[in-house]
Every structure is written in structure tokens, then in C-alpha cells.
Figure (cartoon, rainbow, N blue to C red):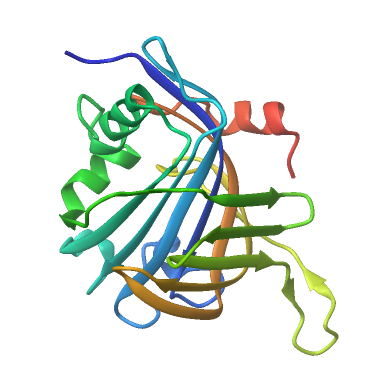
Length: 221
């Protein structure tokens, strides 16, 4: 039976592409393959009567080609503070079950073919969209941080905004420079590669706000 859920969260991604990730413009990944991590910290959320506020979810991933070719491998990492009921709710959401075709988790349910055993661990998740800085730490698994892109000549901070009115992950994101190392089941070492930071709101039908509503809610750019 379909469950009623909603998540409003701080979202971040790191991947092996160049700054500005060509995949978001329907191009092939910079190096042919795609690896890195995605994560979000829930500001407000629920699944039926289960409160999900304050929990963090991270997943490391690897795709041998562009993600639409599938064959993906993923390692889910769930906040150690989650109760059994919260874990069950999060896995239901992440599974893509009962969700509209073309929405984030439904798409990932099709392109991920191998799922590593989930890890339940303490997660450090620091995130400041205005400063364009973030940090994720999971002992023995992930060490990552994001910082503003810098002009290679002047070293001044450079702002790069991605706007996707019809996006399936976010409508608007700050592109930043990502530094991330995966030392768990999926290994990677990314140095000044692509990273995005965005406010998101997802439900069974996908992004719950139109782009105009996002502008009104978050006051950006």
C-alpha cells in the first residue's frame, strides 16, 4: 500500500565530473564513468506518522558509463540515530516504490543494479548555502567538503548557479568545488571536482514545488 510522505532537506552531491557537471546538461560524464556521493539532511519530513526530521542519508555510487545506461552500484548510509520505524520509512522512500515515473528515487530504482549492505553510522553534515561550503564525515567511509569555485587568475570566489525548471533532483543549485574521498565499499578520490548544493522538497510525485515557488520560498538567487 502506498504511503504518504514528504521530505524538505538540504541536498548535496559530489561526482567525478568537471566543475559544472555536463550530465546536468544532458551530456556524457567528463571521464566516461561517474562516481561520488549524494546526501541530504532532512529539515522537515514524515512517512505516514513517522517523523523523519533531523535525519541524514548518504549514498556513495559508481556508474561505468553515463547514469542513463544503468549498471549502477550504490552503498546506502543511514543516520545511526534512526529508529527501526524511521529506517523502514527511509528505505521505503529510497526504493522508489509507489512513486511517479521520472522522479528521483523511481529513476534510481531503475539505474541502480547492485546495492551494497547498508551502513548505520554517525554522520557529520555541515551545510551553508550562502557561503557555498559544506562538509560530510563518516568514519572510515567518507571524507568530503565543498567550497566556492575560484577564478584561476584572480583567485576570487566565483558563483555558478544551475537552474533546472523541469529538474528531477532540484530546481536550482549552487555549483561548488568538491573534494571527496570514499574509502568504503565504493572507493574514489575527487579533487576539485563537481559538487552541487540545493534546497529540495520531494514527495511521491517528485519535486513538490514549481521553480517559481522555490524562488518565493528560498529567496534565491
